[in-house]
Length: 126
Image (cartoon, rainbow, N blue to C red; front, side, top):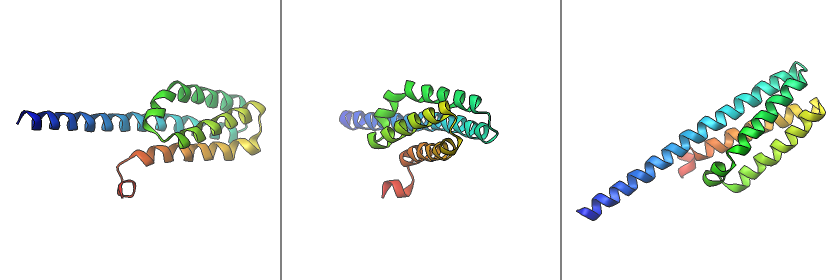
């Protein structure tokens, strides 16, 4: 009976850890995508300085959490997001609206996809 109780406690701790990491991942990716959407709106209005500031701030936010993302995400997808972020920061600094807008939209989709891959949807389990 003692071993069964210990096994159930370990299982519940693992479940709690998974749920907590999913909630944190969802919160941080939602924050990043909302900031990038604001930057995209600023670029549409031709406020490139504000868009650059938002992108740089979001990039710093993402980089500070790199260790967590490395633990809970697949490295290939996380590396792709990091690479796209670097491109986006460069486009924002140079004021390249033609390249900035599609790259920003692509990055928003990549980040949303990262979060969706970790959610317990039936198509992620099967």
